[in-house]
Image 1 (cartoon, rainbow, N blue to C red):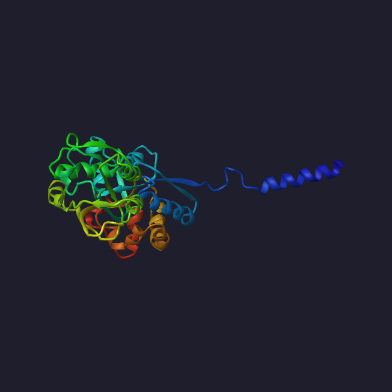
Image 2 (cartoon, rainbow, N blue to C red):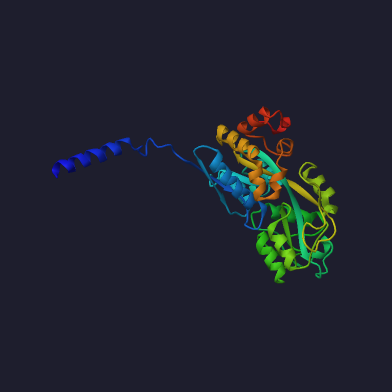
Length: 327
């Protein structure tokens, strides 16, 4: 019996010796992707991207985090609380220059890809009597989550329309889903949302309520004069995108950019961008906006330079960002 026991212990010791220790086992790099609220496109797109990165980039596990979106996302990058972030281009420009919510604290950021265009929605009920932006005066309006790019756009839109966003409305700060629920329940009169087409929260609302989306293209010249023509551009929401919206809506949009800190690993950036293009269909199966990822559009419209790793991939594909977007 003692001989058998000694033999068993010897065998177990040999197995243990052959098992990699924690010090020799390859380390897994965990990446956090700052996205947005659950009712918007960022979270859906980000979830698909996290799965793709985890499967396609060796030694990396990525997770998508629910956030208030652009402003908070970039602050998370600054504070090392996230590794990759979705952001609107106008918020990204403010962050890189230390303006607005980032006053005096610019963030050194790099782009991986320009993804798609966020479309400005101003949503109300058809029977609300609100048909123009000026009709929002004195109304209860959700301006998007505090710390979101939607809030920035909502403030700028009202100002361009001649309203004071601090005085002329009764302000609420709700996410896309919470805004849609509040409008349905009569707790707000209208809400702003900047997101892809279609946005789930608005899509679901339009099925259960008769909605109107306001025409906002009239403020575009003032926005372009104040913030530059490259940030804001005319966009059409086609009739039928949302149930009960039976006419085209002329509005404006701003690019979405996938960004990382300037210190982000270059090879990892290269592999992430490569995976996004190699398996674009996987992303598109999660949300239709991923179909808009293209080599030419991915390098156009970023207010910050591209990561050297991303730039390497684009050059291999024969495309080159404008000089201002190079490191």
